Image (tube, rainbow, N blue to C red; front, side, top):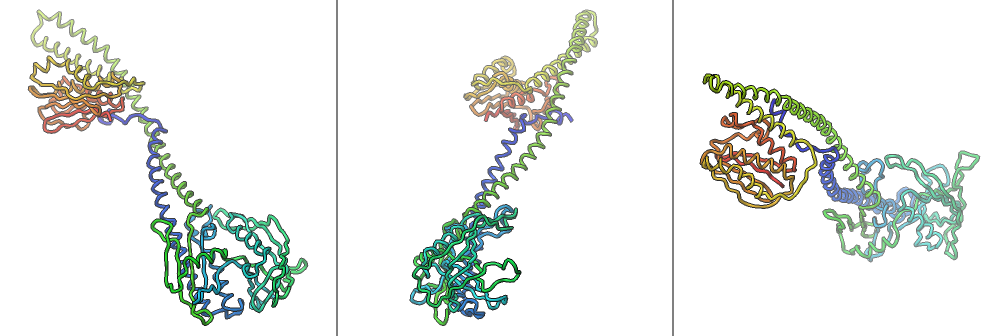
Length: 579
């Protein structure tokens, strides 16, 4: 019970100081988490892109082999080009791994992403590729099996107005919330070759709204523009001019045919295709080549696959480059890091808050305990003084006529009064030392302080044959009064319990003050710095109050220092550690 009541508590602190120290670990863990995520995201993105590239290669090889059986695309070249164009966009992060408010990323959400595919013949000519094209569906009736896919290649027709329309669409692809869609109201159509050239187009600028999970919930038209594409002196042999109804008739639920439904502008810039083929295509190449812009992961995969294309041996060439750190991925990355940091911060806050509540209760109890001890000590001083005075008077009165037994009793009363009075004085001193007050810290010469205190015991040491030495040097920033109190208690404790003809060695430096003394037998130092705790039986006499080391420990802690005691091989060591 005594140990629980008087055990020294850690230095008092405030909630915000405690929280500031506690935040060191969340900061370190967050940095480690950010570094781990920095490696994990590129690995995951590139791994998924590689899987999609493999799937696309297999699909393209199959399309090249079996062609267009349904006749929707007209020939193998159109069918494979369509499949290639659809393979331009690929997801580089699993949607379920992204945060709810951040949509998952695709390769072409950034201009540096790349998904090039091309069929190249034995002479190095590009037969078809996923260079950007406009795709539409030509409908003549309600039967979907009669639908035909038409395409328009800006590099083939070379019409400035159409090229500008396609480029604007590509630029919008890289934006966050805006896009263009088109209603084609007239066009030149070549159904035999599945080609078309738009003439009149209504352009709708659309903004999409996102749900909390990042999915698109609706498109809002924020502007429309009707344009006419000037075909100039273009050779239109084989083309037929056709007008279309873009929507249902206002007065009927039925579609008006013929109609040309705009699907999309798919593919990558022709310049990217030409660059990839020029830099990475190998006429005799086979299998994979890899390029890496990131540590520990491959982000550009180049593949050469032999295919039989329309009866001719060709090479299916693909070049996938994943630009990992696009805007959506950066949002996700920082979102994860911030959420992780906030979670750790919340945990640290709750732990510190709980600890602060316990500390406040503990501080209140300590203050109450100290006030109670002080009041009891002060209240006991008066009756002790009266008892001591009466005992002294009785000794004077009975000095001549009193019996030996009577005088012995009176002397015992005086001894116990003096012992109790010394305990009260030291208790008050301990309470005063532990009280919070502003310290006046100065540079204290540790060796000089130890020598000054040791001189007080010079006569007693000579009488008992004890050798005391002070060595070392150095200074410490401390309140001189409290440091003196701590050092004095250590030295007086050593003088009191050093065996006769033993030694006391005091060593001082800028890191610590160490007092080592010889004792009669080893001492159990557990809880020895707590109030009223004494060591072995030799310490249980009336000459010890069990408060000396407690006062020294409290005085050291007031300065931010630490008292450490140990006993081994009959040598008792007490250290005030400054740093």
